[in-house]
Length: 458
Image (tube, rainbow, N blue to C red; front, side):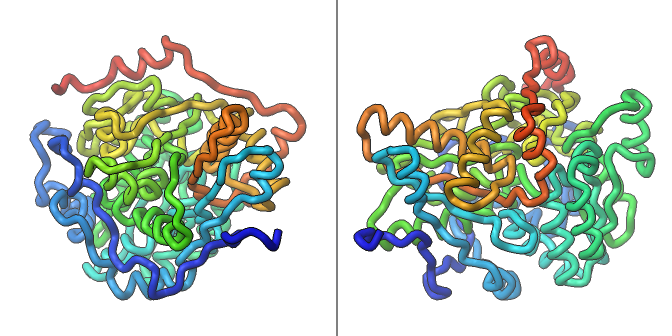
């Protein structure tokens, strides 16, 4: 133990922590596919988005020129309460696997919200407050984003209305309790409180909901309530911008010890954690320099990258949001109620989608939740952190890559994102422990139903 030159946890000082977010869109060579207006199918402009989103967030969403955007002092002051987050060398995991690989993980679950989502939530709440708004609406799947936003809104004195995917609200009641403790109003989605929710329930009364459903309801609530705007915890360009703090810190920490990853791995639902972790390393790839191998990991129950289509699609089930060019299973696709609620989204971030389509993200893997929980439980026993099911996807592939190194003798450096804690996912772990957890993998026929509803847009 004493001969190890790199500490278990690599911390940055306040002076070493990045003070600006990195905008990977400014480095992307492919022409950016614009979002399209849902009524006209023409590229959206700021004036189309301002009634839905905060003005400054709209500017960030459309910004493909500025490589770095300064973190506002008010946001930075909040970040200092929990950032920089630790970069951990997984010595115990390496030894248990018997691998020559060096494994690092960036742990984002150490703040009160329990996940990386707070990085963007506090920024979006700040811009809403600065604009003079009363409050915001949003959706949440597993509850990590809703928890983070309710915490951020409580800090800035904003109202927070959260539409939580119904099956997740049933599976994770304590997440709802935390949100309400911070002052948020939580509504299971789909609900009878919106026109879109009532329509979805009329068509499918027994549905457990999806992120697409919840987005539709949150957008409707925002545009019909004076002084409110809608905010989103993943998918959008602005969110990946804010999450770049993860990768910037990870790179700075590794450089202190002369390390550079050979492989970067992240779970992928909407794309915020993966996009944030890989952002500064993707800059190397786009500049033609040496870069890691990038692997996106998604649930086999909702395989947008591995089995979806690269097409324009609505970002929500109710088809009221702008259309984005992304890998999608169709806005009408209803994923099975697997326990990784934060990954139950029919589409993928336009940034992630474009990078994958252009070959800059090297691989996407879809894994079943039984193998995910197998890896997550092993990680918990060895490293002492109970991971969120979403993070378990990245852990699964990190283990697989490390075991490959054991077979080949390669001494690769592996970096993965541990995006959140699994403290509110004990029901899922209990099902895994008792052997009742099952995989839910859509058939080709299931996917074709979703593809049939794709808009006819080139």
